[in-house]
Image 1 (cartoon, helix red, strand yellow):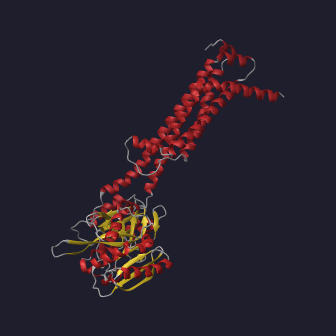
Image 2 (cartoon, one colour; image 1 turned 120 degrees about the vertical axis):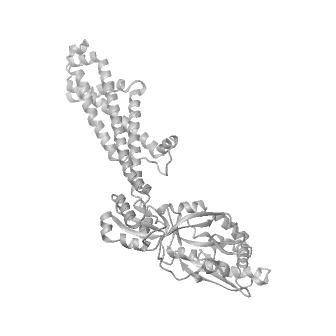
Image 3 (cartoon, one colour; image 1 turned 30 degrees about the vertical axis):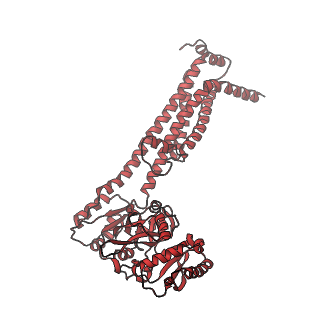
Length: 536
């Protein structure tokens, strides 16, 4: 019975005292929530920023450094590669490997313009966009990094070293309005020049092997060295040149049953055309497999009594494409050219215009750049080195600033709760003296007031955590960055799940108990008479 009465008194005392400590209309509690919200937001933003920096540091392309050789160099690129790929240099400078590659640019057509070309047979050769690319062969180690799950979107790497398909970025497809699952992109190609030296350009469909989020060196697409060699051949020697195609080639990506029906419908369509000269000689299909294992059908149409003529082929395809009988096939039907039969033998590259260096870590990057300049006359752009060193510096600086802000927030909260309790106890000194005169111990009063403030602090913590999480994970930090005029990438830059939060809560609790006991003890250790008569 005695324990029950003591417990009831304890609960009653707790309830009666927590109300005035909470302030008028819970103002003190709301101030605590606001201060904790600021502290937790700082922690969330600090952790989110550090994770963003860590992600950047672990970006598969961060440790790949590109070197552009000087025009007047003594050593060939192959000599340089053989030398710096030696075991001694690799071990000393943490070099994983050095790979030669070529960088180039090509023009591509917008997806909507190609659709219009299909319908009208007329190509607007002035509406092209230019993109940078690099060679990237089957044995290139960066392939593994590119097809990491965090960077890979769809598709597979090259089938072999003579693959003419491309690895493209999402941004490349978006800029040209291609769907993500497009099997081809249309490349601009100078096929010939007429008698007046006017360029004759055509749109060449090039297979898309894979789509990724990004490629090294901010390039838009990558190809094999074989594609690079074949594409650089001029006019009639180039296998992509369709001027001498002797058959109409289509790519159909539907089912086998529909492919059979397509063949029959193509025969019907050409038989219905008024011009006798477009009579077909033969039509058939062959099943093929893309690199990713997806099957499709190459459809071939040959014509009787016709010499190869690009204008004739374009006209024949437009009539076929616009015919109502083929409407159900159009989403899966593409125009190709017969460059498969014209691809030439691969010539191993004997020279490169770039070197790509991959390091396990960048600690000796600056020292290695000196070696390259002294021994081979190769200069690494210092901006590349400094940008990577700055990642480390900014990461450490962010940690320090975050710790200072978190420490300031905790100190502010401790000062507030200590002031709150001290002001309250000073205001009820007489009551406290009376309680002590009737037998309540210092330990009971100190413990109950510490519990009251800690309960308020705990409740404020829960509300502040909830509000911080809602604010941060809904993109609040992005709003702050936008208001401040800071550019940012996708992401919310916020994460509450961290050691910082756990440490902050533990420290806040421990220091709160220590300070609250000290504050309450400094008042309650006076005698009942001193408290009742408010004697210092």
